[in-house]
Length: 219
Ligand code: ADP
Image 1 (cartoon, rainbow, N blue to C red):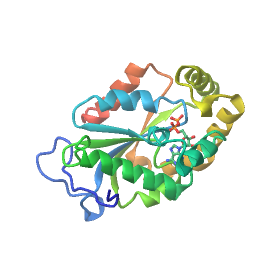
Image 2 (image 1 turned 30 degrees about the vertical axis):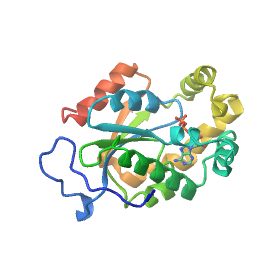
Image 3 (image 1 turned 180 degrees about the horizontal axis):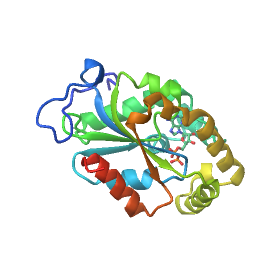
Image 4 (image 1 turned 90 degrees about the vertical axis):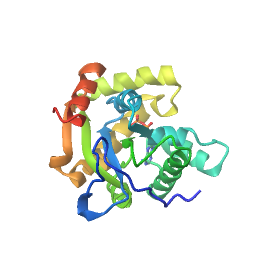
């Protein structure tokens, strides 16, 4: 699989190919779902991914689908069970491979579909490494300043989804700290013009409605 090939694409519903930022072409037209663990990115991504012309990709799911008997699968367990990020180069390579696979099998059609990313880029280095691959059109920041709400949501998810990384409170707190220190600066990388902040404590339907308003040009 050639993970470096990025297929040129047209913008969502636009009839003509878009002139992309920096005059470059061949970038995936991308919406980022951004927020702390437990902020609801996956819930929104799965719902939006059901809409034709959107392709949802959660980086955590990419990692979780790796055979845990492999070296890389073991590395994922090691980092995620400590609430730490998997090293950047590995993360980006895996993500690229996964996306290329979806392009090859036509599940993701970059010339027609917009990409909805969840969990990547997760730090500044990843944002830089992805600069030549994605054109970020909007960052949906699912904001939840109340950490207690997030901790409660993650604990509930741990029971439901059998997630190692949500299994104990110490790991949850480490993940929230990793988010604050390593992930949150990514917002500054893209800048306020691209960011749409949404109160993540609202109902999932309300959050979805706000995202759709923006995507459809009514927000
Ligand atoms: P959440 O949705 O709760 O934020 P994810 O399912 O996205 O959690 O990720 C689970 C774990 O997978 C992370 O804590 C981290 O160890 C690893 N991971 C996911 N995405 C990345 C990434 N882009 N870079 C490095 N590690 C990642």
